[in-house]
Image 1: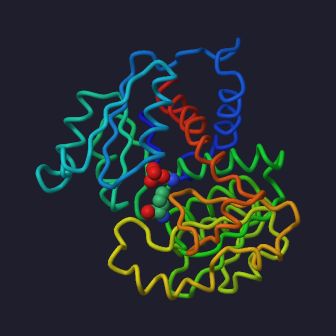
Image 2: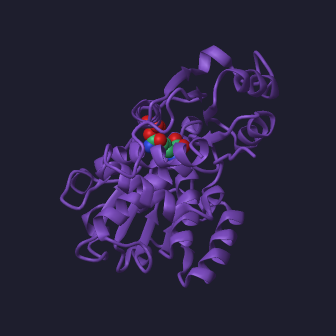
Length: 307
Ligand code: CP
Ligand code: NVA
């Protein structure tokens, strides 16, 4: 049966193994015990409804390093659901490529495409989740802190797709997560419940608050993301005002553990969700995160296509 990665939960049973594999590929790209080109001859179709720097380049580079090839299909080329139905696009692409990476506006359309495709579908971001980002993020935490279980992550800002995936990823790996958002911008309720349920079995806690200082208290990791996700541009002005108390800056970070790391999936907006001093300061690991997209996704591609 094909394996789709639409949610972090689709890596529930082997998430830590995927992270370990990613770390191994990063450290020993060509050493014994790890086949150099396990995806030789495989083709990944990458369908984008929105712009991308990291997702596009890291997937393209990753599959190339594994011996395969990527095809970029931009928003104007397919126009999913407008020029052609989602189901027809999925079935046609399934005749050409071995897997589809899809960046979508809607999680509903993402799932529709995955249902109709006979090849694996990997979520390269939709309005609900960003699972590949989460894998790269937790690989980064593991590298910087040497462990995941028992650490405290504080996510401050908008309870968006990145936040949803982190909630699941932290719960799966035994990390405590505190989220602070304005009350109308909390993360998806169903995901919070799932994360809380998972957290119980992993002996960690998930809390959703509204006070950023409370969330950051004693944090090992402070994470934020844009206040205006792709597709929300019309709400920019209103959001930028509403979220201002949630800016990650030195004053907020004072509450964190002394050796906290600052994380952001990028693109970042200095002076909005993060101050320049934090973004460019000694605690920031944002470019390691960006690099780790390649390593994490190589492990995901092998898990989906290589066995
Ligand atoms: N973080 C991330 O997914 O970046 P892109 O939108 O540039 O792909
Ligand atoms: N939450 C952001 C993430 C960008 C990588 C968005 O959806 O635009």
